[in-house]
Image (cartoon, rainbow, N blue to C red; front, side, top):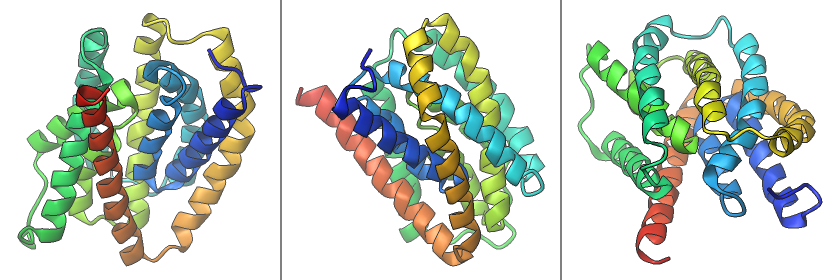
Length: 253
């Protein structure tokens, strides 16, 4: 396990934590970059184990700040699926490669955004379906557990609903706070928490908290149209990056 005295690991770890802070503040899609970035120097599950305690502390801050701004229907529909997805990831963690999961997430994200940009506009009375919410909640729980990349499936279901900006951010905060707590059990059972990983998490907490509050402030001052434009662009380029990363690992390494 790398230590904070390693300059390369320190730079990557600090950058990943800053990204997570902005993500937990409300720009959710960008948080997907953190684990792949740290996976450049350590195994992905180790990276996820370092980041999970940080995420849980950030979740407390975000949930408190957005406690009045969230959509209960979406959380109620998607969370049961997420529980199933986390369970499936727990069972398959030893058999599925990170590259396969990244490829799935990347393709889902790119198809979603391209359809939003170039597809047919949904009807005015279009309503999300419960079955779709359960399904995408399950995919989100699965990919979040495997590679901390649960945002594209979540956004696939929620972004087309065009919720008010703060409601969308609050729903994201509540949903992933629940997912991150549920992930503690499989991470413990897979032996991913260690004294050294928890020490690194603790050292990074002050920075994580500071950047979280900065992200919350940034979301609140960003106009709604700009916020959604940024959200779609982030999902597309992050998904493109995940797809490239997966294909490179599968065919060129």
